[in-house]
Amino acid sequence: MIVHHYLHGTRVQAGSRSLDSLASPVDGSPLGTVQVADFSVVDQAVQSARQAFQSWSLVPVKDRVQVLYKFKMLVENHIGDLAKQVTAENGKTLAESTAGLARGVEIVEYAASLPQLLAGDILEVSSGVDCYTRRFPLGVVAGITPFNFPAMVPMWMFPMAIACGNSFILKPSEQVPFTPLMLADLLKEAGLPEGVFNVVQGDRETVEAVLDHPGISAVAFVGSTPVAKAVYERGIAGNKRMLTLGGAKNHLVIVPDADPAVTAKNVVSSAVGCAGQRCMAASVLIAVGDCDAILDAIESEMRSLTCGKEMGAIISAKAKHRIEGYITRAVERGAKIRLDGRFQPGPGHYIAPTLIDGICHEDECAHDEIFGPVLSILRVKTLDEALAIENANPYGNAACIYTTSGATARYFEMRAEAGMIGVNIGVPVPRDPFGFGGWNASKFGPGDITGRDAISFWTKTKKITTKWTAKSTNWMS
Ligand code: NAD
Image 1 (cartoon, rainbow, N blue to C red):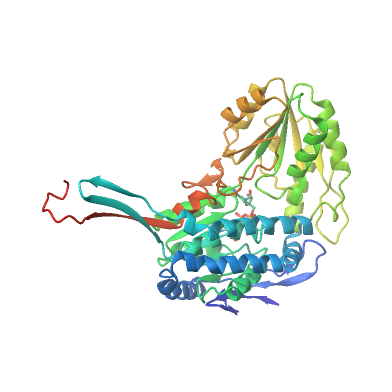
Image 2 (spheres, protein in one colour; image 1 turned 90 degrees about the vertical axis):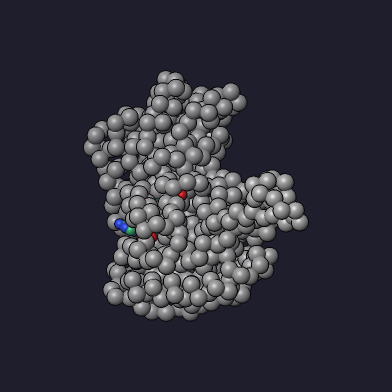
């Protein structure tokens, strides 16, 4: 089966070359083949989006968001089918797929509240002279997304972008191209005019066509750091507004006063939820002082999880091989492997929870983004040592502390160098109106991708100065 693009409200086949056919990470069953959208296909999407923008941008925001209300209802009505599709192509468990969709729905709700958020400012800046602002959409904008959240990450972008009056082109990961087409169908059913939402499938060639197309005003990107950086620089060079979110290496710090049972459950769900394939996953656990009771509880919690039940699959054979390489090299270096998740039977691509103890700061497991269900333990004597390790890491997505002391939590919160801090929460995703975004090598560009900042990213402001006085005065008076 050839995977479709979605142009001007219709599923179409087009493209210069085909990628390797896709197989489900769950059981290896064939899914389809992506044809790469080259510049001419991207150009068709831009033409369609530009045409749609002429009228969509003039629809009052209160009417635009009516489509999102209907879309939210449709996503909720079809959440079972959508979750099955996410699981089939991405490999995460059905519960995880459903949770990702539910988070996407929250963002639709936030975007639907845009009429309450979009009102501008007005001030009499001089006698009889008023200054006020109006926000305008940018035009045709685009989003480029990774494999790990086939619905949720696109939903970080397009609901707010289209509510703001833009037309949107989505370039999903070539590893999970199907779910966005279901979302496109639901947007159409919700009443979104043709051309306001388009999907172009493909790989790097398609991304570069999006970045080089002069008709696209802004691009949001989510993916790995090297690509995020390159995409940011290429887009900026083309004078586009850019926001690109990259990878992560998240540190969780535990101190001896943390509650073992609560901490263990939370740490494990952070480290191995979505099989560790999320940018908020715990990757390094820094144990301050004697935390052995908590570490034992974490190990036994991990042991209780079964691949294919509570644990989802790894996206591809290649990714599985890469992740297992980290475990194999740790074994070869003589690390203490408390749990070894390799050697899981096929046909799906599974790795069970893996716990590596006593790594040193220089170990590759301490600094590489492994992006799998592998948690490495680093032991230190003081919280300041833990903070120094966390802050030396080039990423800055999430950092968390587990403690029952408010003072300890606050000390950490004020000093950890990350955009999203968790206190007794291992996946500290900020919910709207708070924005999602890390620091340092986890993000390029200003602001966050969701929450209030999303409105600024997808709009431009006009500042209008007016004088309606009968008296003739100097314009500054
Ligand atoms: P990826 O960087 O390989 O791919 C992301 C997108 O970029 C895809 O659409 C892909 O087609 C495209 N792409 C890949 N290589 C490219 C290249 N050389 N030039 C131009 N485009 C290219 O990422 P992935 O493997 O799909 O996703 C996992 C990564 O995404 C992890 O690093 C993870 O941390 C990160 N991620 C970050 C966040 C965040 O919010 N910071 C959220 C989810 C995922």
